[in-house]
Length: 116
Image (cartoon, rainbow, N blue to C red; front, side, top):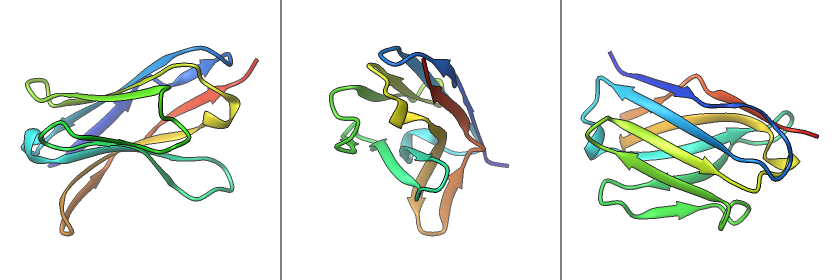
């Protein structure tokens, strides 16, 4: 059974930092393209960042220079370091694992609220 469990969300002031984690089980983690998406109320789901099995990374323009995605294959864990947070970063952050169209998995999400 595949499980992706996110943690690390919470309430933070603008300019603050949070580190999200996604613990994976039931998959060969090192082989998967791992990503962070976010869903804000009334908005479409957005790809925030992703990291491939070889460590290549991609960031949405809105988070470049502020967020850092990383992975620890030995721990089967994906991370998202979020710095200089803005109110517009407020969303439910979801972990995603992809290896093929028939092998895509999602976590339940962790909520991030950026507010004074």
